[in-house]
Length: 212
Image (cartoon, rainbow, N blue to C red):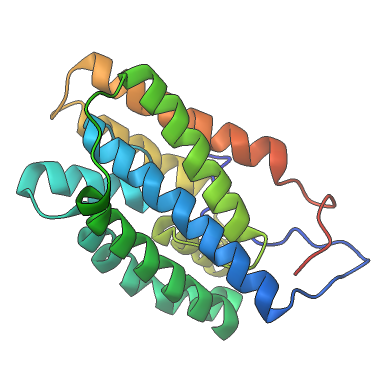
């Protein structure tokens, strides 16, 4: 979706406030927890979303491999683009966040079981969790979105609008899901992606946050 902020971190005003190591650590912890639980809920409800998380979920449904480990494996190659586009610090924090989210999503089934999940509630709640998790990471110059990072890289090198690149990838992911799921499931997946992007669109606007 165009509003996705998988790797957008330019929310800095003239009154710059540098985050401390404790600030960044706290934000990464919160972001990882939110994203990990969001992915777990989607997996339990057999839903998908946009971005690399959606690719990992689709592959997990087809191969029965753990979505968390697929998420890590798919995102790691994009760290090259993260370093080239946004610097070493961003790439290191993104690596930590990606490993932690994948690990958490893989082990949550051992720590938490759910007897019933309403699909509509799950679509909305997981979208909110993922949106808030990505927001926490983006505001502290980190990400877990390989496709978002690639979109920024292509914008820098080719002049392609990152938002449109991200939107194109997300549309492809959701279109592919039409071959695996019924229209209701795909519709709920679109609801998840839309909710996540609305959270980011309303809460991550240039000039409203002075940290970096």
